[in-house]
Structures are given as structure tokens and as C-alpha cells.
Amino acid sequence: MAPGIPAAMERPHFIGIGGAGMSGIAKILAQRGAKVAGSDAKESGTAEALRALGATVHIGHAAGHLADDASCVVVSSAIRADNPELLRAAELSVPVVHRSDALASLMGGLRAIAVAGTHGKTTTTSMLAVALTELNLDPSYAIGGDLAGPGTNAAHGEGAIFVAEADESDRSFQKYDPEVAIVLNVELDHHANYASMDEIYESFEAFTGKVVPGGTLVIAADQAGAVELTERVRALPSLNVVTYGESETADVRVHKITPRGLTSEVTVILNGKYLTFTVSVPGRHYALNAVAALAAGVALGIPAHNLASALGKYTGVKRRLQLKGEAAGVQVIDSYAHHPTEMTADLEAMRGAVSDARLLVVFQPHLFSRTQELGTEMGQALALADGSVVLDIYPAREDPIPGITSDLIIDAARSAGADVTAVHDKAAVPGTIAGMAKPGDLVLTMGAGDVTDLGPQILDHLSS
Image: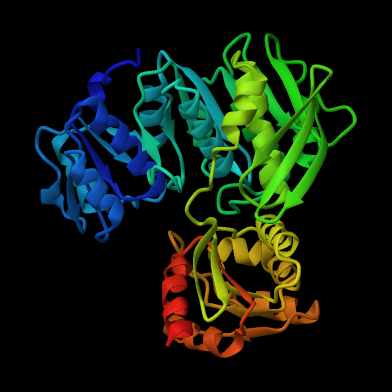
């Protein structure tokens, strides 16, 4: 019963088609039958997956990549104004569509769940996608990371539900009209776009205000920013507010979270009844994400006990505490954490899962603006590790900021008593870690940049 292809999306051209958000939309359109094309900076598994769906993927950016008959050009906020394909679109009068508008058009006519928050969006969206698929509801979904099982970040389903990760970084999540909105937490991040918490709250209020009349906001009851947002939006007409968490006042109350190695057992109180289920990934924060997913599914009318059982089938997302392998008695795990709250949560999760292991971290800061604002907190988080290697800042879409380097993090970490080594040459990291690690240790590669590439290289060094 899923809708077809919006007219403007029949022949879309994606600039940066290999990105997590962009590729998901492109995949869904290709699966619906659109003639998809696009370009990306380099070859990747994502590019190959898109080609397998019939998409044309060019490597590099050039004006000639844009076909004359393109129905639109899809961009993200990371695409610069001087991109040659964007300039060519202007010459041809081809409409330019933001990624969020493209995604919103795909949700039209479906029961949408939009998952927002400073942290945990990808995991929670993934949990819902897996659980709804397990229940044979055949959802469509668009996620910011690849599911460990299906190995993809998006799919077109024939069912009535569309689950989407809603990105607050550039305010684009305000484009959606979900039946259920999830807000996991509200913190200051994306400093290039938000100057204060007031601006963050205003943005989340606008997102919440787009919930369809009679729809539901599922929101955390334990996190300070979410609590503040709840107070701000409770008066919105035709909005059902469902809180979840460990607070005594939560509508879906977490009674107990019991760590069991690399899994957790969660017991909640829902409508006065106890419900226990398994979360197959470690960490308290992931258990709470599962409870948010449970509350959202129940808001759509899915029986709680069925959904709880299906949530146990979720086995993770690539880069979210993903085991990369083991060599010489050392496990290597990859983490996408790049904000201090995320870093702390993942480090604590690893401590709880393997309390007798020595924890070594390879951390790559992400963005100059984030490091400028949160470098001290990042360094303090690294004090939870037994030893850390800190790389230079991964710039992503940003230009350098004078005086802002990884030294901000390293100095803060050492002040907090952490054992930190600065490594400026990424190629030297595998050898450095191999020299530090001993059998029984756990190595965590951490960050949102290309630090993820180091996991296999570290394993190779450990094996040699």
C-alpha cells in the first residue's frame, strides 16, 4: 500500500549519493522504480549497493554528471554552493531539493515515525525497523547507519509504516509530519548551526509541532533537556505525550535493567503491567532506546508483548559498538560516538559488559566547532579508559578554526588523570595500539570520521 514516486523524484540526481542520509533516500526511490543517478567523492560499498539497485553512480563531481533530463537535484546541507553539479543545475533550471524534503515526500500517505534527539537516533530507528519487519509489517525505513543483519540503511516496504531518523543538525527535521515523534534527549550540539540551548529548544518545539493532530510524542522522562521540552509542548492541542524512562512519573516506566554480558534484560511497567524483554546489545542507553521504540510502536496500536519480543531480534548497527574481530586475545570494537555524552555512554557500556578487561581507546575528534565547544568534556570522557590514542580532528564539512586542535582534548584528558598518547599520523595508530595491547584487552575505535578504517588494520597488526 506504499505510495509510488512523487513526480519531482522520477529522475533524481543526488550530489553526495554515498552519504548515510542521501543513500537511504536514493535506495528507496530506486526500489520504487525511479531512475536514480548521483555522484560521490569516492568509491564505496554504498555506491556498489546503489548500482545493484539500478542507480547510476559517478565518482567525483563534475558538471557533465548531471543528465539534461534530471527531474531534480537532491542535496544535503554539506554540499557547497560552488559544487559543479549544483552550478549546472542552475544553468539547466533543474529544481534543487534538500534531502529532508525528498525524505518527507517519500513519507506521504504513510504512518510515519520520526526519531529525533541529540544521541541514539540511528539505534532507535533501527530497532523499530527490525522489530516491525520481524512482525511482518513490512515497513519502509531510512536510517543513518547500516543494520548489522540486512546490511542496509534503507528499504522500501509495502506496509503502512515508515520509520525515519530525523536529523536536527540543520533543522531539517522540521519538514516531517509524523504520526509518532520520538525525542530521546535534547542537548547542545552542532555548534555551527545553533548558538544556544534556547535555539535548540525552539527547533525541537517546531519539530514536535509538526506531529499530525491526534498523534503522539514519545519523550524521555529522565534527561533534563527532554524534560524541559516536555514542559514547553504539553499544551499543544491534539498532541498525546507519552514519557518513558526510570522516573517514577514516566508513563512507560523502566522498572529494572539487568546487564547480561553483551545483552541486557529490561523490565518495564506499561499500563500497570510488568513486561520483560531482552535487548541484544550492551549498555543502559541502548536499553532505554529500546523502551522508546516500544512506546512508539504501542502508540501505533501494535501489541506491546509482540513488539517487545521482536525488539530482541535487533543485533546492532554498524559502527554502534560493532565487534570488528579478535586477534592475539584482543577484541576490537568500533563506536560512532563523537559527542561527550555518547562517548561516556559507550565507555560505560563496555565497562559494564567486560568489567575485568583493560579498555584502550583510539579517538578521532569530529569537527573543529564541536571540539572548540566540547573538547574539555571529550577529554574528561576519555578518563574512563585505561589508555587512549587521540588523532587529529576530522574536519568533515568544516574549515579549520585557528587554535583549535586535538590538544584541547588531550590536555583535558591528562588533567582528568587519563593516560593519553597523541598520534598525528593515522597510519601509525595500528602499530601504536599493537604495542600497547595485551591479551584480554579491549580496543575501541571511536569517532564519526574515518577512524572506523583502523579496526581491521589494528587486527592485522595484532595478528602479525
